[in-house]
Each structure stands twice: as C-alpha cells, then as structure tokens.
Image (cartoon, rainbow, N blue to C red; front, side, top):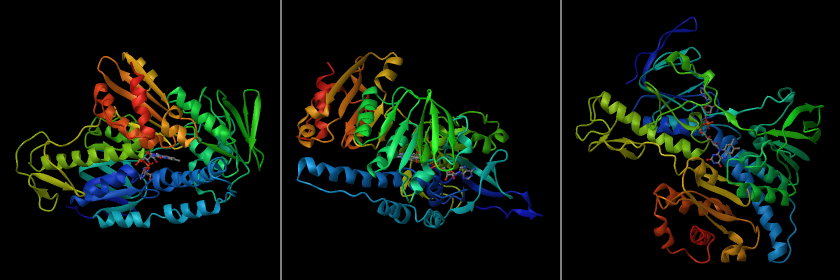
Length: 506
Ligand SMILES: Cc1cc2nc3c(=O)[nH]c(=O)nc-3n(C[C@H](O)[C@H](O)[C@H](O)COP(=O)(O)OP(=O)(O)OC[C@H]3O[C@@H](n4cnc5c(N)ncnc54)[C@H](O)[C@@H]3O)c2cc1C
C-alpha cells in the first residue's frame, strides 16, 4: 500500500510518502495501536522520538513497582519480629537498581521493542513527529501522508510548577528517581499524589530520610479523605515527614543541598523530587495545521477517540486518566474504529452495518467471515466499542495499597446523586485481624440509593488493588446492591469486608 518514496532536495522533502496510518508517539497506547494495525495488514509508520514503550516500562509503572516490591519485602521482613521470631534486615539498593537496569529497561534501550514492532510489519521512524496539515506528519525532513488515519499517542511530561528558583536547580523528575544508582541520605518530595507517595515510601524503606511537601490540605487529594489519612499514617510509620497545606514559595540549591522555602519555614535535602503532576505538550504537535486549538491542557476526544477529521488520540494525551490501563483500553477502541473506517473506505459495511461483504484492496486487512483481524482479535462489523469511564479503577501502590473505582463520595454528592455510604474497617474483619500488620485499611462504598447500585468504591489494605476487582465489576455492570448482598464471600479473605460494608449501606 506504500506510495512512492519521499523525494529529497537539498535535505528538503518535496513530496510526501503515502502510507495507510501514521502513529506519532509509541508509548503504551501508540505502540499497541501501531502494532495491531500493522498486524492487520495496514501500512503503518510508527514515530517515536525517545524510547518505544514510553513512560510505563522505562520510568513509570514497571520499574516503580519493582522498587515497591523490594521495599515491601524489607517491610515484611521487619514484621517477622512481631509475628514470627526475629529478623535482621539490611537494605541494599544495588540489587534493585540492577534489576531495573537489566530486567526492566535493558539499560534504557528499546531495541527489543523496535524489533517487535517491525516484526509485526510496522515501519519505525525515530524522531519527533508533527502534524503538517490534514493527514500529514513531518518527522525532520521526512513527510508522510496518511490515507486513513493519524493517531497521536504522545503522552505527557512532568509539569513543573512555577516556583521561584526551581527551574534553575538540578531537581529530579521521575526519570532520575527511577534511574538512581546510589541513594541520597535525604530527599524532599514536592507533591503528595500517587507517584510521590509511592516513591517516598520506597526510599524511606531503604533508609533515606524523606519529607513530602504537599500544597493541598491532604495527600492523595483526588481520593477519599479516609484514604489520605491511612496513606499519610502509613508513610509516617515508615519515618517519612508528611507536610500538607504547605505551599512551596522558593527553591534554592547551593551546589550540594536543596532548600524549599514555604510558609515562613524551610526544608533541606540532598535531592529534590518534583512530582506535582504531568502535562500534555499540544503546542509541539502542529495541531493548528488541522484546525485544533493547541492551547488546551489535553486533546479532547469523543467516545471513539476521534480528535479531529482523520485524527485519533490515545492515552495520557486525552486527559481521561493517566494510567496504562486507560491507554490500553483506548488503544483497543482506536484499533477497532480505524479498521472500521478502512473497511468503509473500501466499500465494506460500517460498524453498524450488517452486510457480510468485507475486504477490499488486497492485503490491506484480512477478513475473517465478515470481521477484520487485528492482532489476534477480530473486529466484527457492529462491534466498535465506545469508551465508558464510569468504572475507571486506580491504585496507589503504597503499603497498604489504596484502590478506588468510579466516584468518590464528594463527586457523587456534587452530581446530585442520592448518596448512601457503606464502610467497614479491615481490622474488624477476620482476615484483617489475623493479618495484624499493617493494621489499617477499609472498604468504603458509594451507592446511588435511587438506582440501588454502587457508583464508586474504595478498597484500602494489604491487597487493596486486588480486592478492588470485584468492586470494579459491581460498578461497571451496575450490579444491583440486592444481588451483591446475596453473594457468597470466601472466608476469611480481605474482600469479605465488602459484605460488611454492604450491610452498613442501609
Ligand atoms: C512513576 C510513574 C509510575 C506510574 N505507575 C503507574 C501504574 O502503576 N499504573 C498505571 O496504570 N500507570 C502508571 N503510570 C502512568 C503510565 O506510565 C502512563 O499512563 C502511560 O505511560 C501512558 O501511556 P501513553 O502511551 O499515553 O504515553 P507515554 O507512555 O508517555 O508515551 C508517549 C510517547 O510519545 C513520545 N512522544 C512524545 N511526543 C512525541 C513526538 N512529537 N513525536 C514522537 N514521539 C513523541 C514520547 O517519547 C513517549 O515515548 C505511572 C507513571 C509514572 C511517571
């Protein structure tokens, strides 16, 4: 399907190369879309300026969870003293750094991921992509014209607050925190959100003296206040100083230490980690060339991830939730919708059609009895899904874990829902009592009393993220509370506390 080669004239491209699809940004979302469309037989160009795979495998989810796994092993070993005799624990960061370097990131080398994409039939271009008119993407002096779709999956970068002096200091973002080989003695963490708390607890468990500085009046401010309380207490129990309601006014660095000035006082540390949120950089994407406002915080998309005519977007860029599972969820929708678009362009039935004639130009997409094959899964006419974020799950992997789905109590009240709350302490459940440490945790349910369904839930505890799964099903499928009450909950599990919280809903 590829058109003629780009014609270069003194380094300038005079003619774009025609392809089926261009995917700009091969992070979690973009890599999935590009790979699956290439596997479906489309002529796909994937453009990545840094590492294929994006933030999650190199500086995000995976290495941070390796760090957490190691830190939790230390914490569990300390619990031997209370439960099973005595254990002496000497933390050593070297095996953690080695595992991240060798097992997770291949020393921040993406050759395996590039090969994987090429192996699926994609064509890889290293560089920064930028829209240059409808369907057109420029990468350096190469220009590609997409016949069917341009997909943007360019993610976000750390957003650094405009604090006086900060920009001139060698502060850390998550990149330096993940790549660290030798731990500092003291660390200041600016930002008490999920990433800040996870990393703060890890480093504290490895002996770093950590101070978290949060401007809001509580950490994990987007979650239930009860979650904030448990998380702050857990970090304090690990020796972390947690300061809330403290707004940093000025930052300085004297060549060896950082000082954060705030509220008339100051905090010092060998390193300063800034994790105050992330921002999409729309201004870099040439969106004005297709009539899209690049001054927005995120790129808005409809329920099938359309951002504009012929342009789809996927992942953090869309602002629908900065999670790998959102990027993957959206990627599946983009793949189905682009294939549907191709099918229609080739005269086949659209997603709502019932005709059985599918296919078109040879070798574009394989048809399987009226369906198009994409990466091992089939996309049948009539099956293009639409995004539904009602049951968006999120987990902060502190110890205890903070899992949540759907609306918080306040969000539900703000929407005018007739709210009922059900609550159960984990420590009052048999499993929580047996487990003993860490003692804190709870289930909180947010119900729509008029509809008789859950619209949100929080699960905090040693396996809070795992316990959450049943609650995600309940919110996603709007399972009637009457049915949830008449289920059997295995004894003695942590999730049995859900039954107690359901009883509390009355
Ligand atoms: C420390 C940390 C821990 C996290 N932990 C979790 C977790 O436990 N669970 C979870 O679900 N999520 C977690 N996340 C979030 C998760 O990493 C992101 O949601 C996910 O990576 C988003 O994927 P994406 O494809 O949207 O963007 P990204 O992964 O950010 O990828 C975007 C890619 O686009 C490239 N790019 C940008 N602009 C251009 C351009 N103009 N041309 C070419 N390429 C471009 C970038 O180089 C990048 O590779 C964590 C994040 C961090 C920072």
